[in-house]
Amino acid sequence: MAIRGVLRIRALGRGLHGTARRDAVPYFSVAWFTAPACMRVSALLPELIHVAAERAPDATALTAGGASLTYGGLDASVRAFAAGLIELGVTRGARVGIYLDKRFEFVVAAFGATAAGAVFVPLNPLLKPEQVAFILQDCDVRLLVTSPERLPLLAPVLPGCAGVQHVVVTDPAPPGSDAIGWQQLLGAAPRPGHRVIDTDMAAILYTSGSTGKPKGVVLSHRNMVAGAQSVASYLENRAGDTLLAALPLSFDAGFSQLTTAFHSGARVVLLNYLLPRDVLKALEREQVTGLTAVPPLYIQLAQLEWPAAIDATLRYFANTGGRMPRETLALLRRRVPSAKPFLMYGLTEAFRSTYLPPDEVDRRPDSIGKAIPNAEILVLRDDGTPCAADEPGELVHRGALVGMGYWNDPEKTAERYKLLPGREAGLQLPEYAVYSGDTVRRDAEGFLYFIGRRDEMIKTSGYRISPTEVEEVLYATKMVGECVAFGVEHPVLGQSIQVIATAPAGAATVDVASLIAQCKSRMPAYMVPASIDVRGGPLPRNPNGKIDRKLLATEWGERKSA
Image 1 (cartoon, rainbow, N blue to C red):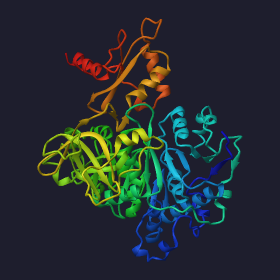
Image 2: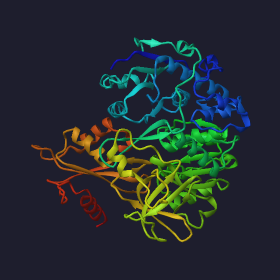
Image 3: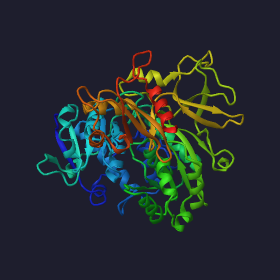
Image 4: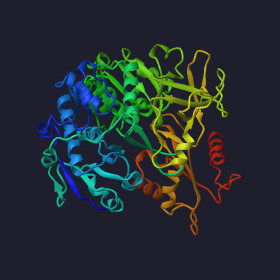
């Protein structure tokens, strides 16, 4: 790896935005600036912050660890970061990786990268070094932003990431690093960024594929800004709101807490929590008005006693990443009776797709609702024709939120992003929609209901996990002969990961305890199998000669229910 320099970031709130040049204009056109402030509408991702800063520069944009950053300060920091990238020679469309927990630097780096005309790639902080290295290599990351605590963990894998030219490390830089001072970065002369329009790339979010390694979902400025405007409209976000960012910012729903808040001029509280009770403390301490989380966290929160003060301020709670159990929903509504519940469905390839209005929750608690504003949801048969009422079919999403495909993967892109059939004959240019792989039905009143996945993805703790990705790690340990992973229903996680394995050649059995330990060292916690069953080989095959995952999962379920 040819690292040209390590940029050293001073702690935000104690020097970052204080020295930024407010006159730097790296990412807006002259026409945009000559429009009256009241008429300016965000078209690019960093404009969400700039518009809010023009309206209320002293309003708080971010809170983390007891410190706060105003919209004016955040806007200045974003533009200063962008100017620093331009001086370093970061080119238009270059990928900027961010391997950090939730903190000010993450936000500045993400929006600053797009302000420079680059593309940000958020990496889940739970990922192991080998998984980080795969993403850095897969999308050819040119600049990596991380922390001094995380950088040593990457030392064994960074030499293999030949594209990485710069590493940005938050203070303090590790001893012996070839650090470039942050003040030097901020001292760059104000200059325009690369020309960017709303259909250009803004981000690549990595999600597990149906087979093999993670795949990068490419999102444009238009995708992300339209998503922010749509979600903020039905959640009725406003400048007085405080949103709690409890989900990882590498999630589309997690990053959405930033974009919807900035579109509305609201405040975001960045929370890295250890225990569910920490979330409740933050809700009370910060007087949070909006909470978005996944079912496993809500299940844990519902079991706790909520301080009465939360109900006085929490205006809504929104669910994403899987179906909310009825019992959990009922408990939450008793904990915070004044808060409106929003049940949502989405996929990274198209951000959010549907939501159920709060006034429909009592009538149809199992529904995922209807299409969000500025999106259309179709239910199609395999031949592309629309399904009748209550007829199961595939959920297909069309509109401004449909992403740009999978990075450098035309085969997987062709599987999910397809031309819409049955368009008007006079329309010459094609339109692509996202085929979700989920089977749903639409009732006579237009409300949608989730039935199941068409593929073999495992949905656990809000994460989509590829079974083959789990299997690859197991094979890499050389502690199994054959193995198969699949998801089984779990009351808290949604699904847990079950593995069936055979002993390696020459061994009598599998050392399950040691294998689990290896998994914990090689995988993030949410990917570690809940259980590994050992059986004699070889494992059964389907007609194509592949291990018959469905048969093994069915047999496992029958044994457990017997």
